[in-house]
Structures are given as C-alpha cells and as structure tokens.
Picture 1: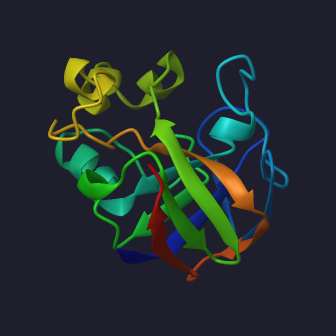
Picture 2: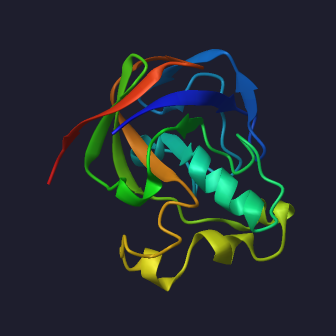
Length: 164
C-alpha cells in the first residue's frame, strides 16, 4: 500500500488540529502538537494519529462537516485503504517510520461535528477488532514512532512490513 500525506496537523490541544507544511515526528509525536487530555491521548503508543481521506469522504457523505485535521489526526493520508490497515503494520511516512498500534476510540470532543459521529466511526465490531466492520478505521489509527523523522505535505507513505 502506498499513499501521500495531504495534511500535517497540530494544535495546542483539542480539535480541530490546524495544517502546517511540515513537522518533525519525535518519540511522542509531532513537534508543536499537544493533546487536551493526556490521560487518554498521546504517549509512546499513541504518538501519531493517522486518518485516511476516504474516511473523511465517507463521513462527509453521512452529513458530518469534517475536513483534514477535524478529528484530531496528525497525518491525513490519501491512497491508503483504511479497510486494510492493521495494528503491527509499519509505514514509512516522509522520513519517519511509524507502527500502527491500535484503532482510535473516539472521545466526546469530536461530537462538535454532529451528534452520533462517535457511533458512526466506532461500533462493537470495531471494538472487538473485527476488520470486516464497515466502520473499521473511520476514526483513524494510532501509531508509535519507530524512527523519528520529518513529514510534509506531499511526502509518500508506504507500507514497509507487518509485524506479528
């Protein structure tokens, strides 16, 4: 799987995250990015949140006014099929290497984009780890940083390996 970074997003905490041209990804995430609730978000296993453009488009079609950065993702990527992204996969994103650790479980913060958006992106099947759920990956994927590096708009994203 190969794709492209279409938006690099940071904030002082909360959503939406605002686009920047580029950022350095360190062990705890993007330089200049903060999380509003560190007891829930962030840390080495949730350093970067990745969302695909197909997820944004699907949520838009369902009537939610979302856009790159709206759901708090750090990297918005085009060309990756969310239905095939799994924990354990490693991706090169720009100069960084990221390992998918888990699906993002939505918090109440995203309800600003419409009542029910949390249920639209996460259901019991997703919670149980069923990749066949039509909601798989709609809320994004958390990743750990295996190799720090720079990311920028237009940089490639490519699947490197799957770790069991």
